[in-house]
Length: 175
Image (tube, rainbow, N blue to C red; front, side, top):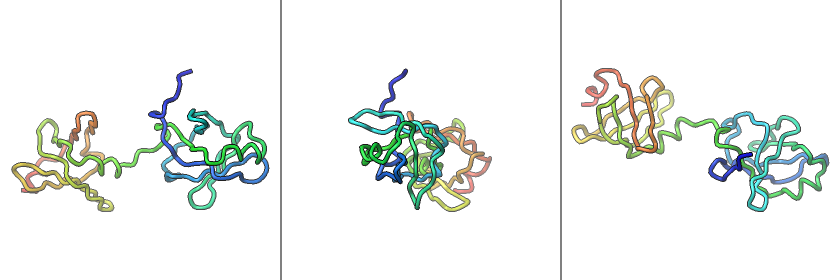
């Protein structure tokens, strides 16, 4: 078995209380439930270790931002009370990426149209149905690039580089 490290996990909430008397827990989420993929287990941080807990059945939404979860081998509220305030984690792969968040963090990246450098990423404008990335270049004060799946070829976080395949003339419109 490969040990799980904190780098592979993302905190999604904490256990806040028992729900009933048969071992159900209430997990207060710190992330939007819609961003979670289906999984069979979560990790609880217990005394600095990440311990996997498997579900007895599918978690249920509870109130606005909580889940009711029944873990295997937890059969009473007394057992659950020992876990109150434990942080709850899932693997990074179990979180759906949020496209908006990705572009909001790319300011200063080098921006290319295929192999041609066009400038540095500036502000991300999250306009509903038409998000735009501003690009600052030496020759143009500001280039506006619409963000959509057809134009974005690659986001290279290691080399801080965004590569687009833009339609001919799009950069010239901004001149």
